[in-house]
Length: 130
Length: 232
Image (cartoon, rainbow over all chains, first blue to last red; front, side, top):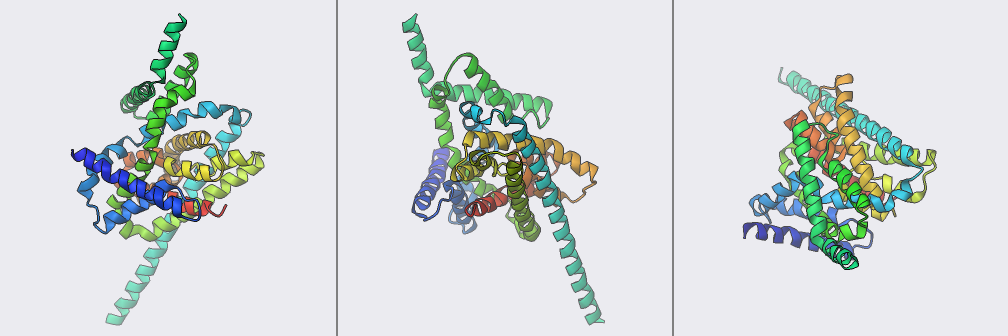
């Protein structure tokens, strides 16, 4: 009963997202609209955490299960990749590592900058007090 | 004999076959992953590596398997929707580090999309393959949506996402050690932005902060990628 109610809530949000996606003048994945909807529903306490907790925890724990059939569908398209195998692998490796380094160093840089600004403000306030 | 074969065919075409095969192979993957605890033995990867040869050697066409597999695929939209719940769980983290997370995610989208398109051009890949690969560093539900929009092949996209995730989950922690990166927030956001959900699972093993940051970045970078891809 509880699980069914939770499923009903999540599925209704998805259906609403599908409707919004159909009405939008540009293509936008309905899954992302659903994600944004649920986030704001939770934020504004329209839905409470306990209303969807069990189902969500189960899904988050087993998230990769739901992609298996899509991944198996590579069987159908493997011909398309033939002759491009090593390029495919190289592109994935190089761009993943580049992205990781660029992101990590951006975060480090921004956090250092924030600390510097904070420290400066503190210095200013400190001298004002004196 | 022919009658037997056609009966067998009818049983296999029943959606239950695809669903059962998927669940059993996933469980084997989970078991191996728990036993050996390495990122390469990812349950999704193991399940695919088991199912594809089974279908191939038993000469079961993909369409027959997909009678059941397709039922599981229907749940991809709700699965992605629930990512909104996981972002909500990280609300405190988001409030504290919103600026580094947002800039990190924005830079990651630029570097990921830019480097992928540039490399595809260098290797002379056509538009369909490029479109399939552009979203390879974001989480699968979003990557599939972006790939469809760009005219890509979703099967190739999912293969790219899994491969990228496994590579990132294995190599990124090595880079962290090599470069002596001590900032847990940076490592978490980096893994979430570059190595999809598999990288996030690895980040959770590295620490609580890394895990929270990674799952946050996974969702945010995904959404940014969708917005950017609208202009491609």
